[in-house]
Length: 518
Length: 73
Image (cartoon, rainbow over all chains, first blue to last red; front, side, top):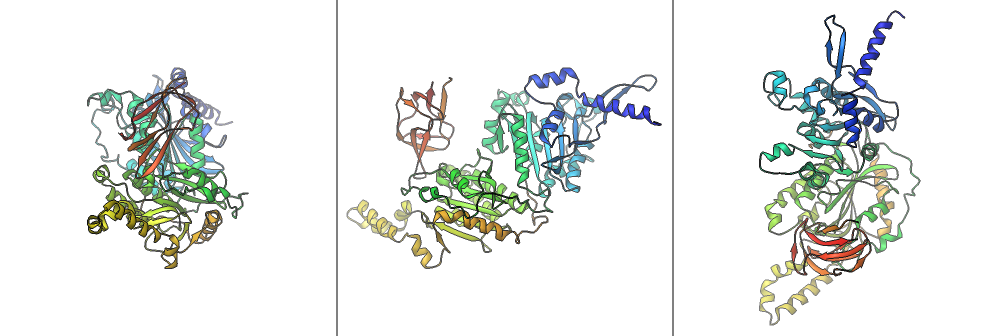
């Protein structure tokens, strides 16, 4: 053993790094109901698979004889690990070490984690707590000068923060208080999860108090605020659930855009016809129905994974499998404005469609859209501009697309049910009902003279409505081949499974023609 | 069991109030029906309990996040 002394020193330094911020700080973390960064990584990845990079990087103090006196590890812990056997990069903030702030970070560590993901084409999971490597005002005293954000030598990290979204799956977990750069790293992801005891904000309560708002962490950036705002996709009760969400999300995606989504064997018959679908849509058009059981009935059993359930709620988005193949699922939810497209719903569609395009996921859209949300609030929110932006996102895709019209299809938002410039598959349920605009209100506008001239205008309105409704049958539209096919809703699963199989040869690995934005 | 507020998840008009204060309800029972974009949107009890208060009236416009009812133990 020529190198015994050096090996001992290496192990000592690793052990010191493993102590993180010390027993007191670790206890405080646990007392707060939170795991330490090392415990988090262990529970997140396959058992024993974490291989750390830069474990002994940190700040050392030496005595007069240049012997190591004490050691404080960097509060950025990163390396490679495996999730369900697939290699990933994991990078986590150690909150026990100066609250995860940049004071105790080493700039190049989180940067290298992002570079490793980009250049080795591996998914990256960011485990975020604190300011995520961002500075505190104290930093000015340790460096003796003010940081220029994005200044010389300090911009490249921001490059990877967003650029990785066009290259590899980026998952971010907010576990604790997340602020500033940490909040940016959480939001700049394909899928983000926070625990319900966590809070996320650009700036926390003390800073916000200075602009006159006296709010607790939860009131300012708790899960109900951030999942409804769409800044965070999902909230869970425990850190373990957050790790399970991250693993499940990854299971649908390729490791990078240079691969295709992984297929998986299924024991759910692709020809299965679910009887419940025949009665899923009420005959009374004023009555709503639940969309999620319909999704569950047509995808591989138990495979639906919803994302962003609390935001842009007229639209439901998620991942699922069809005959074992990962796909993107988009569907309307009539409980929210009858499924009409709001500004938030349009933003959600753009994000979802870009995700599908980036990772070569075919899309199935179960549509029931009576148009854009209307009224003064909708106009003030620029619904139409967000609407045409969503339409543009759909039109820009190259992934295979299949639309099932399950009820309404009206107006411009209705028209945006498939990419307009190429052939997609489309099926309409027996319950389909469509037009340029809904009859109600539309008749008053188009037949005003006739109605006004009638002795009983209300009766005249009813008469015209009845006349037009008779022409509404989707069969008349199919007769003219304005729609390809009207189907028994029970045929949906066999048809979309066929679509997923046809898609096998239509998707090709490689970067998208545009880079997905957060 | 702490009282829970039943809130409106969207901007709408109160179409029908199906229960009164003091009524016993089961999880999933319709408390109030809202109208939005010509659709009837049932608002269900999040859990079983007794209706402690109804905070809105029929035909009243409500906003997203507004409390509609209080459900007691």
